[in-house]
Image (cartoon, rainbow, N blue to C red; front, side, top):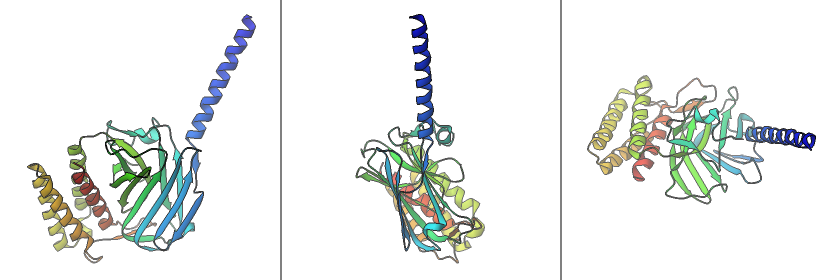
Length: 281
């Protein structure tokens, strides 16, 4: 009996260890699209990670060059929510992976493919794995080159959940649970907006630069006195100002070669997600 019990415990340990290894392997599995279509300025892909978890990816461009299925790599990865790949890149301890949908989607245009776009790209993730609840602060985040995740949400809606954001560049995208106070989120987005301007003043015309600085000051002044409506008006004005600016006034092209900065796209990304946060107060 002792021999049998010992063998049973050893067998149980082996089975448990094997199951854990299989689980870890499954969690780390990287999949490519089951279907992928490219039509003019739009990419649509379906990625299946398990029998319960699928994600539909849609990317739309205002104006793209050299866009075809061979020029861009798209993958999705099912991660352990406590994986350092996620946790080390979170902006706060109040943000976390969604246990029912710990999926990281990566969009990687090939550097030598000659692909590029002007202005903004819109990225949307749709899945039935989790269900939209207005009171749960799920948000769409992005991270560039393994850096910190940042909120780029412009829409969260049902069906079962649809997360949409805009971007001026590409890398990783993930839906996260964001329990940070709204004021903190808004402050971070305004700070990012100012940082982008300060880091790219040489790529903005003097006249437009002055107008952008004035608009950001208006946003900050309104937020200082808790006038969210005035802040929203100032953000809308900035979006209109930058959206209507030409390529001669502000750098507005992203290329897969990584040799230029799409300042217009980066600024509009921050402004549009800032508008989302102000509207959801």
